[in-house]
Every structure is written in C-alpha cells, then in structure tokens.
Image (cartoon, rainbow, N blue to C red):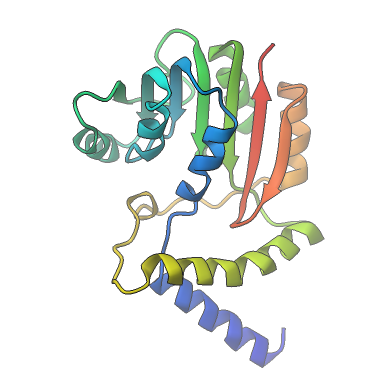
Length: 218
C-alpha cells in the first residue's frame, strides 16, 4: 500500500467513525422479504435492543427475543410497547432457547460468537417443519471476492453514513455500542459447514461486511 492510499484509507475510517450507522438494521427489511406475510411464532437470537423482534411482531402472533446481555434485554423491554406480542429473555443461544418450535428463526450478527456448526444444529432443532431460518453473519476476509466487496463497501458505507446523519449529530446506534469479537471463519468455511448442517441452505456474500444464510425446513 502506498503512503497516499494509506492516508486515504485512514481518512475514510475516521469519517466512518464520525458517521456511524447500523449495518445490521440495514438488513432487517431484507429479512422480512424472505419470510411469509403471516406466521405464528418467531424467535430472534441475539435480539439486542429489539428492533428486529418488533418488526417480526408485525407479522407474527408471538415473538421471543433472547440475548445473553441483561442490560440490553432490559433496554429492549423498555422500548417495546406493552401491546406488542414480543417477550425478551436473558438466555444462552445454545442452551437457553425457550422450549418449543418456531416458524421463523432469525440470528443477526451473533453466530460468529458461537460454535458455528453446533449453533446451526440447535437452530435446526427448534425450527418447525416448513419454517424459515435467516442468518445475517460476519466472516473473516480471505478471498479476492471478500476484499473486492470490502473495497466497494467502504465508500458506500461513508456515503450511507453521511446521508443518514445529514443535518444532525447522530448518537451511536445502540447495537454498535458494545465491542464484539471479530469473525474468525472465512466465507468458504462457513459455506462448507452450513451445507453439512443445513443441506440446501442458500448463502450469499453481502455488502457492508456481511453474509446471509437462508434455509427452509421441509
């Protein structure tokens, strides 16, 4: 990397830090497009402050959100109107999922904190026949495709942050306040393990340093 390109990269990183926005929430509407218009029950794993769970509640009769952080679960409960059919619980994603099966299971920016294959098997066990699992995850850049997407995403990230924060000083999004462990699995490894655990799963690299996984249980 030349000194000029290094300085440009540093400037871009500083701009992005000054104009934060929620990369995970960017995919919430996309998640809804993968789901039926109506379904009975949903489980959001790693539910954070509850934005996705509340969106799911616009289509579901019952939504459960689980997160291992008591503070953020308390925040989700405070932000959720009493009439909304959502319950938030402090629970471990592998051992604490509330009993029963769910028509929809979502997991956004959480699975890289878990043993990947074991997590998929647990999610599969709790998914009802005919149900849909949607994962938005993070992977470690390894291939030329990963670095190309990263290069494309960086200026788009800056432009999106500027547009979202234009004319105001935006607080840092709640889902971005906690430091998270970087992803340690590459996308090819994720694809390989996912295909073993969930035959027929559809995986795609996405912008803004994410990938998606969609699996329908027959």
